[in-house]
Image (cartoon, rainbow, N blue to C red):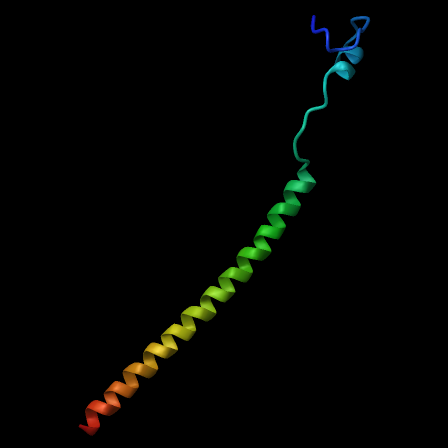
Length: 74
């Protein structure tokens, strides 16, 4: 490693490893927290979606019943 940006070492492995810049990234715990938060958000969105679907189906059924009642009266 002839990079002039690294501090000088005496060639030992520990010195070479400590001279390397720290690797960036996420820890396993951070990734687990993100997955847990996403899971909660997805479950909430799914529940809201099914409430919406039930509301639309109820509305469609009401319209169908009203139109059938109007057809029977005519």
